Length: 75
Image 1 (cartoon, rainbow, N blue to C red):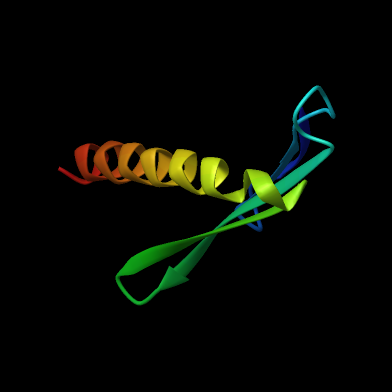
Image 2: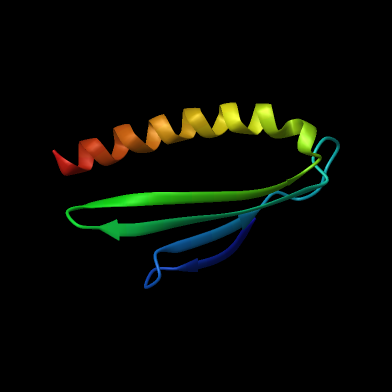
């Protein structure tokens, strides 16, 4: 669920509704300018904590997809 999208602050907040496995999931993705590049900060608040390894693995896949997409845009 999209919670907020702030283009000026380069910030996106979203949530995954509680369900069978996830009791709580809120996240924020921010683009932070740094010299000639940008850094992406992705913060997730998750319950139960036992799902962290699964979510971390999914984040790694998503980060790779973002890197490829952004590299294609820069080319």
